[in-house]
Length: 246
Image (cartoon, rainbow, N blue to C red; front, side, top):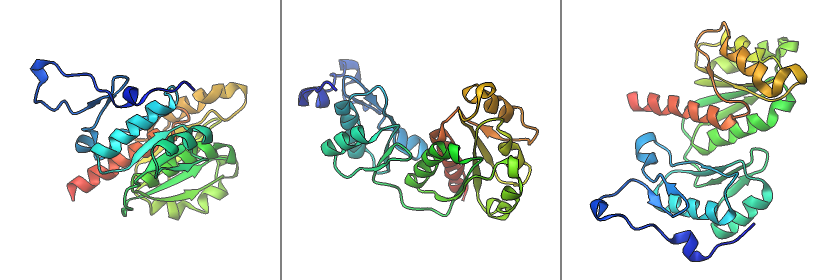
């Protein structure tokens, strides 16, 4: 990947006279405006999406987030070579290879419990992202794998564990039916993640997405295809809101 000088990493565009002395709530690195105020607004620092960014850009953003915030700093969708290069520039990060997630300064564990459930083993990578993001931002996570509706007795065997959770993330491809099944069995919020798993008519996750959106189990939250990250962040909003009321 092309490199850059230290000036490229650290230089900030000067503010205009009108903005002099006013904190804009972000750090202008020239190539990115890092939202340093997000932790104050939402309880977590900005999360960095890795693809499309150079290694030096990721490192510079991470360094600024670590400097300006106190909570966990995450980079999503990074493979081992990129993770190794970034952590050489910003030490202290841990790479969760299955989840493709880099984490600095994980949050202390809370009592809020999220159950991550998969329909099949092929849904594992998406579930791993949901699991490790949730853990990095402070949630207690329990997992139940391969409990899809083709053998629904597997789901019924773990239903009490799911009912004990504060929220359930359901990760399923093909026809996406597991989300409806879980939604009908538990009272807590259910966050459904369609995956691109399945043969032709699964349409790379579109079939599961539409099935989850039209579920007769009322009140499901549905996130984007293969986005375990979005599901974990939805769980965080629930946890953050619950904490704010207590």
